[in-house]
Image (cartoon, rainbow, N blue to C red; front, side, top):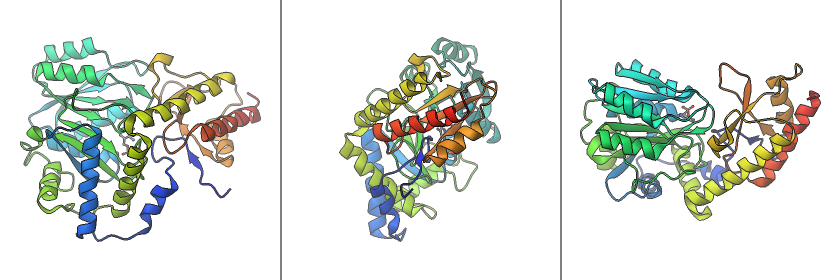
Length: 365
Ligand SMILES: *Cc1c(COP(=O)(O)O)cnc(C)c1O
């Protein structure tokens, strides 16, 4: 097959040919042309959150997790106390990062099948006045559940605590606008709903917060304060930027705006997701979450209970047909995940459903 395999995974994901072609040039990181791309990229990202001037965005080399670690290490002081709202694997990763940084960390756990419950967060903040920051995963990619960002943001503002949001798998698809939201830091990355290639993250920071974060970070390379000041002063990245990833993201952003921005992207992903859900229901495969809790990013499906079922076979047969699935991330029950994001639409989704159905038939399910 001459077509690349379609990635039904939440990053890396399928990118357009135009985005791939943007990576065919070499760039000098100190050169004016590349500095202009960095500047335009940051401005475009700030446009998506409808920044009125209170926020900045700082790009960071590495995968998305590097930026989560950078954000926590830079924003939360050593004397801080982070309350991590946990309903999945990425929440627990955030807690591990915070603990490893030597920050006092409290984990408030919820069932993986439920959104984080506002009243319990409110109670936790009331019961422990030493909590300085709340850590929230917007879309918990482990299951695909979307947590109540606006409500948590309102609560944090009301209680006077900081908010750090991992919006890695939702940014670009779901509305995230500082005209209604307030946060200290919000993290996303190149290779998710903006449909760039993986290799860099970016952190939106409230200027009033980042300006007070000098010397917080115990890391040299992951210090967002230093990255911010150096970039503002020189227009350059502190250390070698992933030049090809940056230009590819910029090209992907141009296409994002041409498509109609966040509302258009969400509409396409919702259409993909709806087709997927209906197609799987037809062959008796049900989602792990309640239907009203599903996001348009990724769906976790309950694996067939038939003894002949194995994820390995499902994966290999669908891969041979040109589609890559994602394993489940739940410890208790057998599941598999299928993403709806990336440069794909109804055509690819229908083909993918056919491939999955064929694979299940192959196992006589
Ligand atoms: C993808 C993702 C990350 C980052 O994962 P990396 O493998 O480091 O890119 C973090 N949080 C969430 C919710 C994600 O979906």
